[in-house]
Image (tube, rainbow, N blue to C red):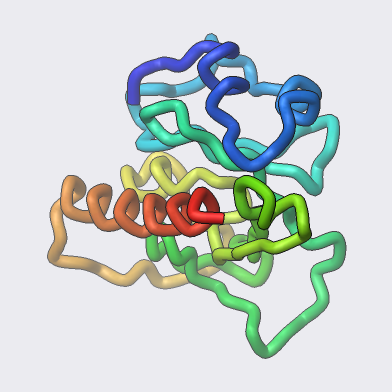
Length: 163
């Protein structure tokens, strides 16, 4: 992924107001491992229930994570973007307000994604899930796994933008 600037990131956030986009704390962009990323994702340290995903074209969406981590039969331990298996707290159901009027009315969509939004690093073996999980071996190449992850993430982002 090519490095993005603060104005690109803030200007590309599609499902929040300009005021909210201005209040989001960005990561240290100089320290981001851009070459290892397929998308940029982080949790806002000023509002830990809020997270952000920014695609390579600078289109971004704001996500919310649930306030409580109640055990649920619907809980997943596998990321639906990169298909990395995690221990009990490694995957979160992130919820995104839809873009436009529909989102302002409270309509949302959600997806189970790695809690730290580091799918790119898991795909490349630069980060390992916590716990004693056995990683499923795949016959897909890294490029094929990245393509699959980005197809999955693009589908989620499109659902948000279709608001």
